[in-house]
Length: 365
Image (cartoon, rainbow, N blue to C red):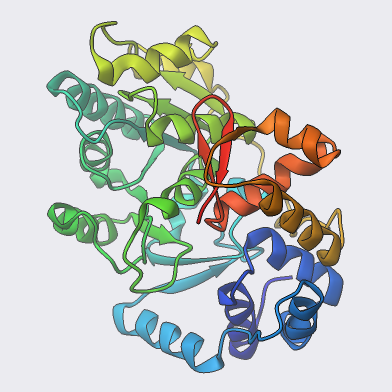
């Protein structure tokens, strides 16, 4: 159940902001102890059992300051299980327990499509993004993107009049990049919404964007990639979308244009080819998916927190700064892919491991 009182919200946020507590750990703690208040009491002893002798949960004053910052800018807290929390996102195992929002949550009642692509988009790429976003908005879809330069910017601008969702890598009050500050304000003013799971005031860093990307794809029914290089953040979003069971579509590009390389790879691997908005709409019929009667509940933990902590430490002990293959890591651990893959995702979202192209992984020093 979501927190219903201010004290419960503070406890949830303290637990989530505590050191070494990521999304998966948060849910395991809630499953083990039933409420955030009790989990916070047990955190120091759990840390000692994992070899961390001096550990303190996030202080109450830190969270109180964050909530004051939110009140000052008019941000609201959406908790998983709330009526306004995005339903599609709530169905995911790694859905953010809490999201800061600025704007109108009514947009979540409409079907949503993520439209992402290159920051250094070509003229043709931005034209395509504007055309797709405008046509999809006219057809009743809400456009979701990341407020980045290039394709994201073009998509948001075209969908402003009908409401668009911008998912940020930093705090919901941090307007990044600076040239999109007015666009970010217009999104809120014109019936859209800005979202972030990061603390208020946090400046975005590269390690925050993979976690941001899972929200972009998780909110939407499908992800459409307009232009993307083979090693781009948009390809990470597409990969995450496939893991989440979302449709992935791509606009083809010229083989000599590096900005089209990622899209062409997606098409080679089975993504649906997009020429216009009709291709997307046809693939997604019926327009409105059935809405569950009850809000989704956090998943029950598959392992105890102690077991998860031990596996995380084993993985980190095996890894170093030199990348190794995920298959080799699984063999070295003597574990199953089913156990190791979710743990790697936890560590990646916590910023403790880094994924490289070709299925390689290294430890973040």
